[in-house]
Image: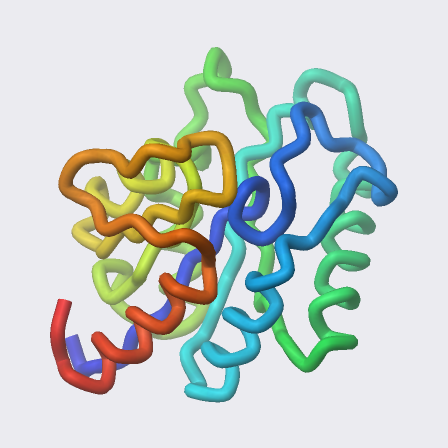
Length: 180
């Protein structure tokens, strides 16, 4: 690894409040510290991407066009506050579809790393669920748990933070010190 890192962000419970089967923009509530976290990562020139499982698409609760519009509006909300989320990578499938893009499988993270020209293992995967931590483990990246979503207790073996801002500060200090 050449010292360059990037951050993979989960959507629900990390950037926005977790809402089961979120399908409408009026259901989106941004977690306050998330905007500040993304901004400081941007200022440090650390690329960020969002990788999210959205089975609401395959369940027919929302179509892909509407989901993409929701993500565009979310990006605009962050951008208005000087924070750039980066590209969204979405798995629209259910667990029972056995696709290769659903977290904790690594296809979307590999695609994101390729688009950035970075090693997938140089990622910090930040999320609120065990699936996010397993994604990090499956690709040799570092998983950082945030307590703002569905899994409040930290999974074993992973560092846990009150919110995304605290996790982002660790990313910055780790990069600057060459640490984990």
